[in-house]
Image 1 (cartoon, rainbow, N blue to C red):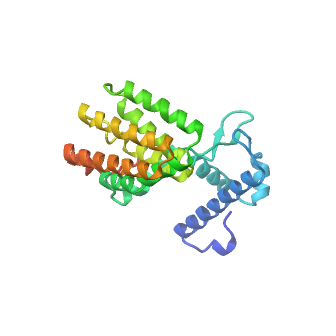
Image 2: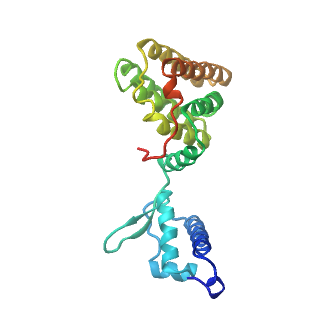
Image 3: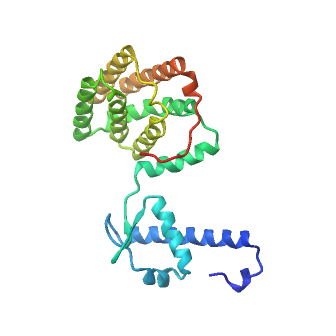
Length: 255
């Protein structure tokens, strides 16, 4: 609702004020979700109750809810008895927001490869220090699948999954989140490339050494082998397809 003090403002300023208010309401809703210990699948209060709780116009509340839906915090169920339901933001939600920002920063694949070179060695070292038995089992199963996929089109996807598992095994969710998001951002960009048989064999050897180091809790070896792997992979991509490495990040639907 526009107050009398805002009545003389130009439409652009009024819109900015309304958008800021909607963001404040969205933040308040998130705080209430956490403070009330709401879980995935829990329904939020009815619209009339939320209007009274946050003291805003209906349009402002709905804008706040749409913002939270875009971020993956809630989903809006349709039909009788529908309304906002608590969700858990997924990696694809983060990747989508990140790709939008990176597009406006004119970011290319080379920059993402450099970022991977910077974080992957430390990620592997942390995994060697902190991986649980469940993490080790998942990594072992994934590596076995990677060996089976070594001569198929599934190799690249299974390879990405191994690195994702390693990121989450680090015990630091930001490593897992960023690693998985980078893979989502680059999946479509690299789909036309594929690895040669020689490069696949090289990747398998490096990953076997990394997995062994993680099992032995040898963080130095895990870091060293991962540094060698990601540096060699970046060089391989740059040499085989320089036009791909120069390709710009584009915002779009992230699967």
